[in-house]
Length: 639
Image (cartoon, rainbow, N blue to C red; front, top):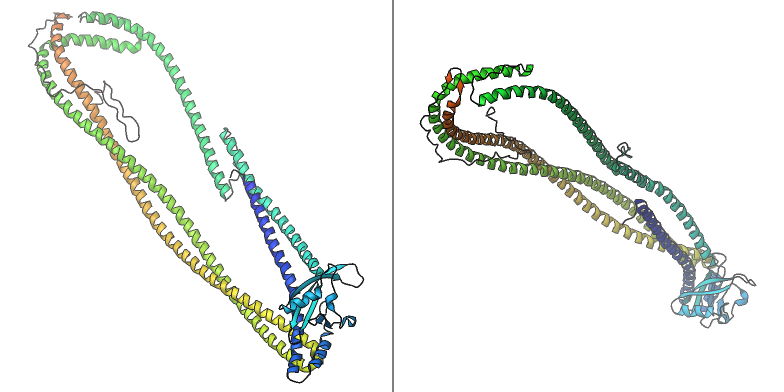
Protein backbone atom coordinates (compact mmCIF):
# COMPACT_ATOMS: atom_id res chain seq x y z
CA UNK A 1 0.00 0.00 0.00
CA UNK A 2 1.51 3.29 -1.13
CA UNK A 3 0.11 5.32 1.76
CA UNK A 4 2.12 7.56 4.03
CA UNK A 5 2.86 6.47 7.59
CA UNK A 6 0.57 9.16 9.01
CA UNK A 7 -2.33 7.89 6.90
CA UNK A 8 -1.68 4.32 7.97
CA UNK A 9 -1.72 5.40 11.64
CA UNK A 10 -4.96 7.33 11.03
CA UNK A 11 -6.48 4.21 9.47
CA UNK A 12 -5.44 2.21 12.52
CA UNK A 13 -7.14 4.76 14.80
CA UNK A 14 -10.29 4.60 12.67
CA UNK A 15 -10.35 0.80 12.91
CA UNK A 16 -9.97 1.04 16.70
CA UNK A 17 -12.84 3.56 16.89
CA UNK A 18 -15.06 1.35 14.71
CA UNK A 19 -14.30 -1.67 16.90
CA UNK A 20 -15.14 0.38 20.01
CA UNK A 21 -18.46 1.47 18.48
CA UNK A 22 -19.30 -2.15 17.60
CA UNK A 23 -18.45 -3.31 21.12
CA UNK A 24 -20.52 -0.49 22.65
CA UNK A 25 -23.48 -1.38 20.39
CA UNK A 26 -23.36 -5.03 21.45
CA UNK A 27 -23.11 -4.01 25.10
CA UNK A 28 -26.12 -1.70 24.78
CA UNK A 29 -28.12 -4.42 23.07
CA UNK A 30 -27.24 -6.81 25.89
CA UNK A 31 -28.23 -4.13 28.43
CA UNK A 32 -31.60 -3.63 26.68
CA UNK A 33 -32.30 -7.36 26.83
CA UNK A 34 -31.24 -7.47 30.48
CA UNK A 35 -33.60 -4.61 31.44
CA UNK A 36 -36.55 -6.28 29.73
CA UNK A 37 -35.72 -9.70 31.17
CA UNK A 38 -35.47 -8.23 34.69
CA UNK A 39 -38.92 -6.67 34.31
CA UNK A 40 -40.35 -9.93 32.97
CA UNK A 41 -38.73 -11.93 35.76
CA UNK A 42 -40.26 -9.54 38.33
CA UNK A 43 -43.74 -10.12 36.90
CA UNK A 44 -43.20 -13.88 36.71
CA UNK A 45 -41.98 -14.01 40.32
CA UNK A 46 -45.11 -12.21 41.55
CA UNK A 47 -47.38 -14.58 39.67
CA UNK A 48 -45.37 -17.60 40.87
CA UNK A 49 -45.70 -16.38 44.45
CA UNK A 50 -49.46 -16.05 44.03
CA UNK A 51 -49.67 -19.54 42.48
CA UNK A 52 -47.68 -20.91 45.42
CA UNK A 53 -50.03 -19.19 47.82
CA UNK A 54 -53.07 -20.70 46.04
CA UNK A 55 -51.33 -24.07 46.18
CA UNK A 56 -51.07 -23.71 49.95
CA UNK A 57 -54.81 -23.12 50.24
CA UNK A 58 -55.52 -26.04 47.89
CA UNK A 59 -53.44 -28.27 50.14
CA UNK A 60 -55.60 -27.27 53.08
CA UNK A 61 -58.69 -28.12 51.00
CA UNK A 62 -57.28 -31.53 50.17
CA UNK A 63 -56.46 -32.12 53.82
CA UNK A 64 -60.08 -31.25 54.76
CA UNK A 65 -59.10 -28.28 56.84
CA UNK A 66 -61.02 -25.89 54.55
CA UNK A 67 -63.75 -26.18 52.01
CA UNK A 68 -63.13 -25.07 48.43
CA UNK A 69 -65.18 -21.91 48.84
CA UNK A 70 -63.45 -21.01 52.09
CA UNK A 71 -60.08 -21.56 50.52
CA UNK A 72 -60.99 -19.36 47.52
CA UNK A 73 -62.32 -16.60 49.76
CA UNK A 74 -59.21 -16.63 51.89
CA UNK A 75 -57.03 -16.66 48.77
CA UNK A 76 -58.80 -13.52 47.50
CA UNK A 77 -58.28 -11.82 50.84
CA UNK A 78 -54.59 -12.79 50.92
CA UNK A 79 -53.85 -11.61 47.36
CA UNK A 80 -55.87 -8.39 47.55
CA UNK A 81 -53.34 -6.30 49.61
CA UNK A 82 -50.26 -7.51 47.73
CA UNK A 83 -48.43 -4.60 46.07
CA UNK A 84 -45.07 -4.30 44.33
CA UNK A 85 -43.27 -1.81 42.15
CA UNK A 86 -45.18 1.47 41.85
CA UNK A 87 -48.40 0.27 43.50
CA UNK A 88 -48.79 -2.60 41.00
CA UNK A 89 -51.15 -5.43 41.95
CA UNK A 90 -52.37 -8.95 41.16
CA UNK A 91 -55.71 -9.90 39.60
CA UNK A 92 -57.40 -13.22 38.86
CA UNK A 93 -59.95 -14.39 36.28
CA UNK A 94 -61.96 -17.52 35.74
CA UNK A 95 -62.02 -19.46 32.48
CA UNK A 96 -65.06 -17.49 31.22
CA UNK A 97 -63.36 -14.14 31.90
CA UNK A 98 -65.09 -13.30 35.19
CA UNK A 99 -62.85 -11.25 37.49
CA UNK A 100 -62.75 -13.44 40.61
CA UNK A 101 -60.26 -11.10 42.34
CA UNK A 102 -59.43 -7.47 41.59
CA UNK A 103 -58.29 -4.59 43.85
CA UNK A 104 -61.02 -2.37 42.37
CA UNK A 105 -64.31 -3.41 44.03
CA UNK A 106 -66.25 -2.04 41.03
CA UNK A 107 -64.60 -4.57 38.72
CA UNK A 108 -64.99 -7.54 41.07
CA UNK A 109 -67.24 -10.16 39.41
CA UNK A 110 -67.46 -8.32 36.05
CA UNK A 111 -66.73 -9.80 32.61
CA UNK A 112 -63.15 -8.95 31.70
CA UNK A 113 -63.43 -10.25 28.12
CA UNK A 114 -65.29 -7.10 27.11
CA UNK A 115 -62.31 -4.86 27.96
CA UNK A 116 -60.06 -3.76 25.09
CA UNK A 117 -57.25 -1.26 24.75
CA UNK A 118 -56.94 1.80 22.50
CA UNK A 119 -55.84 -0.43 19.61
CA UNK A 120 -58.83 -2.72 19.94
CA UNK A 121 -57.01 -5.65 21.53
CA UNK A 122 -59.07 -7.80 23.99
CA UNK A 123 -56.14 -8.22 26.27
CA UNK A 124 -57.89 -10.10 29.11
CA UNK A 125 -59.12 -12.74 26.69
CA UNK A 126 -55.56 -13.08 25.35
CA UNK A 127 -54.24 -13.43 28.94
CA UNK A 128 -56.62 -16.34 29.66
CA UNK A 129 -55.65 -18.04 26.40
CA UNK A 130 -51.94 -17.68 27.19
CA UNK A 131 -52.49 -19.01 30.72
CA UNK A 132 -54.21 -22.15 29.38
CA UNK A 133 -51.29 -22.62 26.97
CA UNK A 134 -48.82 -22.83 29.86
CA UNK A 135 -48.38 -19.15 30.68
CA UNK A 136 -47.33 -16.19 28.58
CA UNK A 137 -46.96 -12.45 28.16
CA UNK A 138 -49.47 -9.98 26.74
CA UNK A 139 -48.71 -6.41 25.67
CA UNK A 140 -51.46 -3.80 25.48
CA UNK A 141 -51.87 -0.01 25.71
CA UNK A 142 -53.90 2.00 28.19
CA UNK A 143 -53.78 5.21 30.19
CA UNK A 144 -51.83 5.20 33.43
CA UNK A 145 -54.49 7.39 35.11
CA UNK A 146 -58.20 7.45 34.49
CA UNK A 147 -59.22 10.33 32.29
CA UNK A 148 -55.64 10.88 31.07
CA UNK A 149 -54.84 11.03 27.36
CA UNK A 150 -51.30 9.70 27.86
CA UNK A 151 -51.26 6.12 26.58
CA UNK A 152 -48.47 3.84 27.83
CA UNK A 153 -47.54 0.25 26.96
CA UNK A 154 -48.18 -2.34 29.64
CA UNK A 155 -46.75 -5.86 29.85
CA UNK A 156 -48.78 -8.54 31.65
CA UNK A 157 -48.03 -12.14 32.52
CA UNK A 158 -50.74 -14.75 33.12
CA UNK A 159 -50.47 -18.30 34.48
CA UNK A 160 -53.17 -20.90 35.11
CA UNK A 161 -53.87 -22.36 38.55
CA UNK A 162 -55.34 -25.61 37.26
CA UNK A 163 -57.11 -26.92 40.42
CA UNK A 164 -59.42 -23.91 40.46
CA UNK A 165 -59.17 -23.07 36.73
CA UNK A 166 -58.17 -19.53 37.69
CA UNK A 167 -55.91 -17.32 35.62
CA UNK A 168 -53.51 -15.42 37.89
CA UNK A 169 -52.05 -12.33 36.22
CA UNK A 170 -50.32 -9.05 36.86
CA UNK A 171 -48.80 -6.33 34.71
CA UNK A 172 -46.35 -3.43 34.69
CA UNK A 173 -46.01 -0.34 32.57
CA UNK A 174 -42.83 -0.58 30.48
CA UNK A 175 -42.51 2.94 29.07
CA UNK A 176 -39.97 3.68 31.80
CA UNK A 177 -37.74 0.91 30.40
CA UNK A 178 -37.07 2.92 27.25
CA UNK A 179 -36.30 5.98 29.37
CA UNK A 180 -33.91 3.94 31.51
CA UNK A 181 -32.29 2.40 28.44
CA UNK A 182 -31.83 5.76 26.69
CA UNK A 183 -30.19 7.10 29.86
CA UNK A 184 -27.67 4.26 29.68
CA UNK A 185 -27.19 4.98 25.97
CA UNK A 186 -26.40 8.63 26.69
CA UNK A 187 -23.93 7.61 29.38
CA UNK A 188 -22.23 5.15 27.02
CA UNK A 189 -22.02 7.76 24.27
CA UNK A 190 -20.52 10.25 26.70
CA UNK A 191 -17.88 7.77 27.85
CA UNK A 192 -17.14 6.81 24.24
CA UNK A 193 -16.72 10.45 23.27
CA UNK A 194 -14.33 11.03 26.18
CA UNK A 195 -12.29 7.90 25.39
CA UNK A 196 -12.22 8.71 21.67
CA UNK A 197 -11.04 12.25 22.42
CA UNK A 198 -8.33 10.81 24.69
CA UNK A 199 -7.34 8.37 21.92
CA UNK A 200 -7.08 11.19 19.38
CA UNK A 201 -5.11 13.34 21.86
CA UNK A 202 -2.58 10.52 22.33
CA UNK A 203 -2.54 9.27 18.72
CA UNK A 204 -1.85 12.61 17.02
CA UNK A 205 1.40 13.33 18.95
CA UNK A 206 2.43 9.70 18.48
CA UNK A 207 1.82 9.86 14.73
CA UNK A 208 3.72 13.12 14.51
CA UNK A 209 6.62 11.71 16.54
CA UNK A 210 6.94 8.97 13.89
CA UNK A 211 6.16 10.84 10.64
CA UNK A 212 8.00 14.11 11.36
CA UNK A 213 11.45 12.57 12.01
CA UNK A 214 11.08 10.48 8.85
CA UNK A 215 10.15 13.59 6.83
CA UNK A 216 13.14 15.46 8.31
CA UNK A 217 15.38 12.49 7.52
CA UNK A 218 14.08 12.46 3.92
CA UNK A 219 14.84 16.19 3.51
CA UNK A 220 18.35 15.71 4.93
CA UNK A 221 19.03 12.79 2.57
CA UNK A 222 17.83 14.83 -0.42
CA UNK A 223 20.16 17.71 0.57
CA UNK A 224 23.02 15.22 0.98
CA UNK A 225 22.26 13.71 -2.44
CA UNK A 226 22.33 17.24 -3.91
CA UNK A 227 25.90 17.68 -2.60
CA UNK A 228 25.28 19.61 0.62
CA UNK A 229 27.78 18.05 3.06
CA UNK A 230 26.98 20.59 5.82
CA UNK A 231 23.46 19.30 6.38
CA UNK A 232 22.74 18.14 9.95
CA UNK A 233 21.30 14.62 10.16
CA UNK A 234 18.26 14.69 12.53
CA UNK A 235 17.63 11.95 15.09
CA UNK A 236 21.29 10.94 15.49
CA UNK A 237 20.95 10.59 19.29
CA UNK A 238 17.78 8.46 19.30
CA UNK A 239 17.83 4.80 20.32
CA UNK A 240 15.03 3.59 18.06
CA UNK A 241 14.91 2.60 14.37
CA UNK A 242 14.99 6.28 13.34
CA UNK A 243 18.24 6.66 15.29
CA UNK A 244 19.68 3.68 13.40
CA UNK A 245 18.64 5.29 10.08
CA UNK A 246 20.27 8.56 11.17
CA UNK A 247 23.49 6.71 12.04
CA UNK A 248 23.57 5.06 8.60
CA UNK A 249 22.98 8.39 6.82
CA UNK A 250 25.66 10.06 8.99
CA UNK A 251 28.14 7.35 7.97
CA UNK A 252 27.25 7.96 4.31
CA UNK A 253 27.77 11.70 4.83
CA UNK A 254 31.22 11.19 6.40
CA UNK A 255 32.21 8.88 3.54
CA UNK A 256 31.19 11.54 1.01
CA UNK A 257 33.22 14.17 2.89
CA UNK A 258 36.29 11.91 2.92
CA UNK A 259 35.86 11.24 -0.80
CA UNK A 260 35.80 14.98 -1.53
CA UNK A 261 38.92 15.51 0.60
CA UNK A 262 40.75 12.79 -1.32
CA UNK A 263 39.71 14.40 -4.61
CA UNK A 264 41.05 17.77 -3.43
CA UNK A 265 44.36 16.20 -2.39
CA UNK A 266 44.66 14.48 -5.77
CA UNK A 267 44.02 17.76 -7.58
CA UNK A 268 46.68 19.53 -5.46
CA UNK A 269 49.17 16.77 -6.28
CA UNK A 270 48.42 17.09 -9.99
CA UNK A 271 49.01 20.87 -9.92
CA UNK A 272 52.29 20.34 -8.04
CA UNK A 273 53.45 17.85 -10.66
CA UNK A 274 52.63 20.24 -13.50
CA UNK A 275 54.64 23.02 -11.85
CA UNK A 276 57.59 20.65 -11.37
CA UNK A 277 57.37 19.70 -15.03
CA UNK A 278 57.49 23.37 -16.06
CA UNK A 279 60.57 24.02 -13.90
CA UNK A 280 62.25 20.96 -15.32
CA UNK A 281 61.42 22.07 -18.88
CA UNK A 282 63.08 25.49 -18.32
CA UNK A 283 66.15 23.77 -16.92
CA UNK A 284 66.21 21.35 -19.83
CA UNK A 285 66.07 24.20 -22.37
CA UNK A 286 69.17 25.84 -20.84
CA UNK A 287 70.99 22.56 -20.88
CA UNK A 288 69.90 21.95 -24.45
CA UNK A 289 71.83 25.03 -25.69
CA UNK A 290 75.03 23.83 -24.03
CA UNK A 291 74.33 20.37 -25.35
CA UNK A 292 73.94 21.61 -28.94
CA UNK A 293 77.31 23.40 -28.77
CA UNK A 294 78.92 20.33 -27.30
CA UNK A 295 77.28 18.08 -29.90
CA UNK A 296 78.77 20.27 -32.65
CA UNK A 297 82.28 19.70 -31.29
CA UNK A 298 81.60 16.01 -30.71
CA UNK A 299 80.13 15.66 -34.19
CA UNK A 300 83.37 16.89 -35.80
CA UNK A 301 85.41 14.52 -33.67
CA UNK A 302 83.18 11.54 -34.43
CA UNK A 303 83.16 12.30 -38.15
CA UNK A 304 86.93 11.95 -38.18
CA UNK A 305 86.71 8.96 -35.87
CA UNK A 306 84.13 7.33 -38.13
CA UNK A 307 86.52 7.80 -41.03
CA UNK A 308 89.02 5.72 -39.07
CA UNK A 309 91.22 8.57 -37.88
CA UNK A 310 92.26 7.55 -34.38
CA UNK A 311 94.51 10.60 -34.09
CA UNK A 312 91.57 12.94 -33.68
CA UNK A 313 91.30 14.94 -30.40
CA UNK A 314 88.74 17.49 -29.07
CA UNK A 315 90.79 20.69 -28.63
CA UNK A 316 87.98 23.33 -28.41
CA UNK A 317 86.61 24.49 -25.02
CA UNK A 318 83.08 23.27 -24.08
CA UNK A 319 80.64 23.91 -21.22
CA UNK A 320 81.89 23.08 -17.78
CA UNK A 321 79.54 20.10 -17.30
CA UNK A 322 80.74 18.64 -20.62
CA UNK A 323 84.44 19.18 -19.91
CA UNK A 324 84.85 15.77 -18.28
CA UNK A 325 83.28 14.21 -21.36
CA UNK A 326 85.76 15.98 -23.65
CA UNK A 327 88.65 14.78 -21.53
CA UNK A 328 87.24 11.28 -21.47
CA UNK A 329 86.68 11.38 -25.25
CA UNK A 330 90.28 12.28 -25.84
CA UNK A 331 91.42 9.64 -23.38
CA UNK A 332 89.05 7.09 -24.91
CA UNK A 333 90.30 7.73 -28.42
CA UNK A 334 93.87 7.38 -27.18
CA UNK A 335 92.96 4.17 -25.42
CA UNK A 336 91.06 3.01 -28.49
CA UNK A 337 94.09 3.69 -30.62
CA UNK A 338 96.12 1.53 -28.27
CA UNK A 339 93.43 -1.14 -27.98
CA UNK A 340 92.91 -1.53 -31.70
CA UNK A 341 96.25 -3.10 -31.91
CA UNK A 342 95.33 -5.61 -29.26
CA UNK A 343 91.91 -6.25 -30.82
CA UNK A 344 93.34 -7.53 -33.99
CA UNK A 345 95.27 -10.18 -32.13
CA UNK A 346 92.23 -11.15 -30.01
CA UNK A 347 89.69 -11.56 -32.82
CA UNK A 348 90.65 -15.14 -33.55
CA UNK A 349 90.24 -16.32 -29.95
CA UNK A 350 86.97 -14.37 -29.61
CA UNK A 351 85.46 -16.07 -32.64
CA UNK A 352 86.30 -19.50 -31.20
CA UNK A 353 84.73 -18.67 -27.81
CA UNK A 354 81.57 -17.26 -29.40
CA UNK A 355 80.74 -20.61 -30.94
CA UNK A 356 80.77 -22.29 -27.54
CA UNK A 357 78.72 -19.47 -25.98
CA UNK A 358 76.01 -19.80 -28.65
CA UNK A 359 75.60 -23.51 -27.97
CA UNK A 360 75.30 -23.04 -24.18
CA UNK A 361 72.93 -20.07 -24.56
CA UNK A 362 70.52 -22.07 -26.73
CA UNK A 363 70.30 -24.85 -24.11
CA UNK A 364 69.83 -22.36 -21.28
CA UNK A 365 67.11 -20.45 -23.18
CA UNK A 366 65.12 -23.66 -23.76
CA UNK A 367 65.23 -24.70 -20.08
CA UNK A 368 64.45 -21.16 -18.86
CA UNK A 369 61.40 -20.91 -21.11
CA UNK A 370 60.00 -24.21 -19.76
CA UNK A 371 60.52 -23.05 -16.17
CA UNK A 372 58.80 -19.70 -16.89
CA UNK A 373 55.74 -21.47 -18.37
CA UNK A 374 55.42 -23.76 -15.31
CA UNK A 375 55.76 -20.84 -12.91
CA UNK A 376 53.11 -18.87 -14.80
CA UNK A 377 50.60 -21.74 -14.49
CA UNK A 378 51.45 -22.10 -10.78
CA UNK A 379 50.88 -18.38 -10.14
CA UNK A 380 47.52 -18.46 -11.97
CA UNK A 381 46.36 -21.50 -9.94
CA UNK A 382 47.45 -19.87 -6.67
CA UNK A 383 45.52 -16.74 -7.64
CA UNK A 384 42.30 -18.73 -8.14
CA UNK A 385 42.79 -20.65 -4.86
CA UNK A 386 43.47 -17.41 -2.96
CA UNK A 387 40.35 -15.79 -4.39
CA UNK A 388 38.24 -18.83 -3.41
CA UNK A 389 39.67 -18.78 0.14
CA UNK A 390 38.96 -15.03 0.42
CA UNK A 391 35.34 -15.61 -0.64
CA UNK A 392 35.09 -18.45 1.91
CA UNK A 393 36.40 -16.14 4.66
CA UNK A 394 33.92 -13.40 3.70
CA UNK A 395 31.02 -15.89 3.61
CA UNK A 396 32.02 -17.28 7.01
CA UNK A 397 32.16 -13.75 8.44
CA UNK A 398 28.67 -12.98 7.16
CA UNK A 399 27.37 -16.31 8.49
CA UNK A 400 28.89 -15.47 11.89
CA UNK A 401 27.05 -12.12 11.93
CA UNK A 402 23.74 -13.81 10.98
CA UNK A 403 24.24 -16.48 13.67
CA UNK A 404 24.96 -13.80 16.31
CA UNK A 405 21.78 -11.91 15.35
CA UNK A 406 19.71 -15.13 15.49
CA UNK A 407 21.13 -15.93 18.96
CA UNK A 408 20.16 -12.48 20.30
CA UNK A 409 16.63 -12.74 18.89
CA UNK A 410 16.18 -16.24 20.33
CA UNK A 411 17.33 -15.01 23.77
CA UNK A 412 14.82 -12.15 23.64
CA UNK A 413 12.09 -14.64 22.67
CA UNK A 414 12.98 -16.78 25.69
CA UNK A 415 12.62 -13.79 28.01
CA UNK A 416 9.17 -12.99 26.55
CA UNK A 417 8.06 -16.61 27.01
CA UNK A 418 9.18 -16.50 30.67
CA UNK A 419 7.11 -13.40 31.29
CA UNK A 420 4.10 -15.04 29.58
CA UNK A 421 4.40 -18.12 31.85
CA UNK A 422 4.51 -15.89 34.96
CA UNK A 423 1.46 -13.92 33.77
CA UNK A 424 -0.52 -17.11 33.13
CA UNK A 425 0.41 -18.37 36.60
CA UNK A 426 -1.03 -15.21 38.12
CA UNK A 427 -4.20 -15.64 36.04
CA UNK A 428 -4.55 -19.22 37.31
CA UNK A 429 -4.14 -18.08 40.95
CA UNK A 430 -6.80 -15.37 40.43
CA UNK A 431 -9.15 -17.99 38.93
CA UNK A 432 -8.72 -20.19 42.03
CA UNK A 433 -9.59 -17.25 44.30
CA UNK A 434 -12.69 -16.40 42.21
CA UNK A 435 -13.72 -20.07 42.29
CA UNK A 436 -13.53 -20.03 46.09
CA UNK A 437 -15.67 -16.89 46.21
CA UNK A 438 -18.25 -18.44 43.85
CA UNK A 439 -18.42 -21.53 46.08
CA UNK A 440 -19.19 -19.27 49.05
CA UNK A 441 -21.91 -17.48 47.01
CA UNK A 442 -23.38 -20.83 45.96
CA UNK A 443 -23.47 -21.99 49.60
CA UNK A 444 -25.13 -18.70 50.66
CA UNK A 445 -27.75 -19.10 47.90
CA UNK A 446 -28.45 -22.66 49.03
CA UNK A 447 -28.87 -21.61 52.65
CA UNK A 448 -31.06 -18.65 51.59
CA UNK A 449 -33.26 -20.99 49.54
CA UNK A 450 -33.72 -23.27 52.56
CA UNK A 451 -34.53 -20.31 54.79
CA UNK A 452 -37.04 -18.95 52.25
CA UNK A 453 -38.67 -22.38 51.97
CA UNK A 454 -38.96 -22.67 55.74
CA UNK A 455 -40.28 -19.11 55.92
CA UNK A 456 -42.93 -19.93 53.31
CA UNK A 457 -44.02 -22.99 55.24
CA UNK A 458 -44.19 -21.00 58.47
CA UNK A 459 -46.13 -18.21 56.74
CA UNK A 460 -48.63 -20.73 55.41
CA UNK A 461 -49.06 -22.08 58.89
CA UNK A 462 -49.57 -18.54 60.21
CA UNK A 463 -52.58 -18.12 57.99
CA UNK A 464 -53.78 -14.61 57.32
CA UNK A 465 -51.03 -13.00 59.40
CA UNK A 466 -48.30 -14.60 57.30
CA UNK A 467 -49.65 -13.82 53.84
CA UNK A 468 -47.41 -10.81 53.23
CA UNK A 469 -44.41 -12.62 54.68
CA UNK A 470 -45.11 -15.60 52.38
CA UNK A 471 -44.87 -13.34 49.34
CA UNK A 472 -41.54 -11.93 50.55
CA UNK A 473 -40.23 -15.42 51.29
CA UNK A 474 -41.23 -16.60 47.85
CA UNK A 475 -39.43 -13.61 46.28
CA UNK A 476 -36.28 -14.31 48.35
CA UNK A 477 -36.43 -17.95 47.30
CA UNK A 478 -36.61 -16.96 43.64
CA UNK A 479 -33.64 -14.63 44.01
CA UNK A 480 -31.64 -17.34 45.78
CA UNK A 481 -32.36 -19.83 43.01
CA UNK A 482 -31.26 -17.36 40.33
CA UNK A 483 -28.11 -16.54 42.34
CA UNK A 484 -27.28 -20.24 42.60
CA UNK A 485 -27.78 -20.76 38.86
CA UNK A 486 -25.61 -17.72 38.04
CA UNK A 487 -22.90 -18.91 40.47
CA UNK A 488 -22.99 -22.36 38.87
CA UNK A 489 -22.58 -20.90 35.36
CA UNK A 490 -19.69 -18.65 36.50
CA UNK A 491 -18.02 -21.61 38.22
CA UNK A 492 -18.28 -23.65 35.01
CA UNK A 493 -16.79 -20.81 32.94
CA UNK A 494 -13.92 -20.34 35.43
CA UNK A 495 -13.16 -24.10 35.38
CA UNK A 496 -13.02 -24.01 31.57
CA UNK A 497 -10.79 -20.92 31.72
CA UNK A 498 -8.43 -22.63 34.20
CA UNK A 499 -8.10 -25.65 31.89
CA UNK A 500 -7.31 -23.38 28.92
CA UNK A 501 -4.80 -21.37 30.99
CA UNK A 502 -3.11 -24.61 32.07
CA UNK A 503 -2.87 -25.72 28.44
CA UNK A 504 -1.42 -22.30 27.53
CA UNK A 505 1.18 -22.58 30.34
CA UNK A 506 2.28 -26.00 29.06
CA UNK A 507 2.57 -24.74 25.46
CA UNK A 508 4.46 -21.57 26.47
CA UNK A 509 6.81 -23.60 28.72
CA UNK A 510 7.51 -25.99 25.82
CA UNK A 511 8.17 -22.98 23.58
CA UNK A 512 10.61 -21.58 26.17
CA UNK A 513 12.53 -24.88 26.31
CA UNK A 514 12.66 -24.99 22.49
CA UNK A 515 14.01 -21.43 22.41
CA UNK A 516 16.69 -22.33 24.98
CA UNK A 517 17.78 -25.28 22.82
CA UNK A 518 17.82 -23.02 19.75
CA UNK A 519 20.00 -20.46 21.61
CA UNK A 520 22.45 -23.24 22.57
CA UNK A 521 22.62 -24.62 19.02
CA UNK A 522 22.99 -21.14 17.49
CA UNK A 523 25.81 -20.30 19.94
CA UNK A 524 27.65 -23.51 19.03
CA UNK A 525 27.12 -22.82 15.34
CA UNK A 526 28.44 -19.25 15.77
CA UNK A 527 31.61 -20.58 17.45
CA UNK A 528 32.18 -23.11 14.63
CA UNK A 529 31.63 -20.43 11.98
CA UNK A 530 34.04 -18.09 13.82
CA UNK A 531 36.71 -20.83 13.82
CA UNK A 532 36.12 -21.44 10.09
CA UNK A 533 36.40 -17.70 9.36
CA UNK A 534 39.68 -17.40 11.32
CA UNK A 535 41.15 -20.44 9.57
CA UNK A 536 40.06 -19.15 6.17
CA UNK A 537 41.65 -15.75 6.83
CA UNK A 538 44.90 -17.39 7.95
CA UNK A 539 44.89 -19.60 4.83
CA UNK A 540 44.23 -16.56 2.63
CA UNK A 541 47.19 -14.72 4.21
CA UNK A 542 49.50 -17.71 3.72
CA UNK A 543 48.36 -18.18 0.12
CA UNK A 544 48.94 -14.50 -0.64
CA UNK A 545 52.50 -14.80 0.67
CA UNK A 546 53.14 -17.99 -1.33
CA UNK A 547 51.55 -16.48 -4.43
CA UNK A 548 53.67 -13.33 -4.07
CA UNK A 549 56.84 -15.39 -3.81
CA UNK A 550 55.86 -17.51 -6.83
CA UNK A 551 54.97 -14.38 -8.77
CA UNK A 552 58.38 -12.87 -7.96
CA UNK A 553 60.09 -16.07 -9.06
CA UNK A 554 58.12 -16.01 -12.31
CA UNK A 555 59.14 -12.40 -12.94
CA UNK A 556 62.81 -13.20 -12.35
CA UNK A 557 62.57 -16.32 -14.51
CA UNK A 558 60.99 -14.36 -17.36
CA UNK A 559 63.67 -11.72 -17.09
CA UNK A 560 66.32 -14.45 -17.17
CA UNK A 561 64.67 -16.04 -20.21
CA UNK A 562 64.56 -12.71 -22.01
CA UNK A 563 68.15 -11.93 -21.18
CA UNK A 564 69.29 -15.42 -22.25
CA UNK A 565 67.53 -14.97 -25.57
CA UNK A 566 69.13 -11.56 -25.99
CA UNK A 567 72.52 -12.98 -25.04
CA UNK A 568 72.09 -15.77 -27.59
CA UNK A 569 71.11 -13.35 -30.31
CA UNK A 570 73.95 -11.01 -29.34
CA UNK A 571 76.51 -13.80 -29.44
CA UNK A 572 75.30 -14.90 -32.84
CA UNK A 573 75.44 -11.35 -34.10
CA UNK A 574 78.83 -10.86 -32.50
CA UNK A 575 80.18 -13.93 -34.28
CA UNK A 576 79.07 -12.55 -37.60
CA UNK A 577 80.42 -9.12 -36.86
CA UNK A 578 83.79 -10.45 -35.76
CA UNK A 579 84.62 -11.18 -39.36
CA UNK A 580 83.56 -7.72 -40.38
CA UNK A 581 85.62 -6.33 -37.52
CA UNK A 582 88.68 -8.01 -38.92
CA UNK A 583 88.06 -6.35 -42.26
CA UNK A 584 87.40 -3.01 -40.59
CA UNK A 585 90.64 -2.97 -38.66
CA UNK A 586 92.50 -2.12 -41.82
CA UNK A 587 90.58 1.13 -42.16
CA UNK A 588 91.88 2.68 -38.92
CA UNK A 589 94.85 5.01 -38.94
CA UNK A 590 96.95 5.64 -35.84
CA UNK A 591 99.96 7.78 -34.98
CA UNK A 592 102.13 4.73 -35.51
CA UNK A 593 100.84 4.26 -39.01
CA UNK A 594 98.12 2.08 -40.60
CA UNK A 595 97.00 -0.73 -38.42
CA UNK A 596 96.75 -3.86 -40.57
CA UNK A 597 94.59 -6.68 -39.51
CA UNK A 598 94.75 -10.06 -40.82
CA UNK A 599 91.59 -12.03 -41.22
CA UNK A 600 91.62 -15.20 -39.18
CA UNK A 601 89.86 -18.38 -39.91
CA UNK A 602 86.07 -18.23 -39.87
CA UNK A 603 84.42 -18.74 -36.47
CA UNK A 604 82.47 -21.97 -36.02
CA UNK A 605 78.69 -21.68 -36.60
CA UNK A 606 76.55 -21.98 -33.44
CA UNK A 607 74.35 -25.03 -32.92
CA UNK A 608 70.60 -24.47 -33.37
CA UNK A 609 69.37 -27.63 -31.65
CA UNK A 610 67.60 -25.78 -28.85
CA UNK A 611 67.20 -22.37 -30.38
CA UNK A 612 64.35 -20.70 -28.56
CA UNK A 613 62.10 -18.48 -30.66
CA UNK A 614 62.39 -14.79 -29.97
CA UNK A 615 59.50 -13.58 -27.80
CA UNK A 616 58.64 -10.56 -25.72
CA UNK A 617 58.61 -10.69 -21.98
CA UNK A 618 55.10 -11.47 -20.69
CA UNK A 619 53.31 -9.29 -18.17
CA UNK A 620 51.80 -11.41 -15.40
CA UNK A 621 48.90 -10.42 -13.19
CA UNK A 622 49.76 -10.53 -9.51
CA UNK A 623 47.44 -11.82 -6.83
CA UNK A 624 46.28 -8.30 -5.95
CA UNK A 625 45.42 -7.53 -9.59
CA UNK A 626 48.48 -5.36 -10.46
CA UNK A 627 50.69 -5.94 -13.50
CA UNK A 628 54.15 -7.41 -13.14
CA UNK A 629 56.98 -4.94 -13.89
CA UNK A 630 58.05 -4.97 -17.56
CA UNK A 631 61.72 -5.83 -18.05
CA UNK A 632 63.46 -3.57 -20.56
CA UNK A 633 66.20 -4.42 -23.04
CA UNK A 634 68.91 -2.62 -21.04
CA UNK A 635 68.51 -4.69 -17.86
CA UNK A 636 71.97 -6.29 -17.65
CA UNK A 637 72.90 -4.35 -14.52
CA UNK A 638 69.80 -5.68 -12.73
CA UNK A 639 70.58 -9.20 -13.89
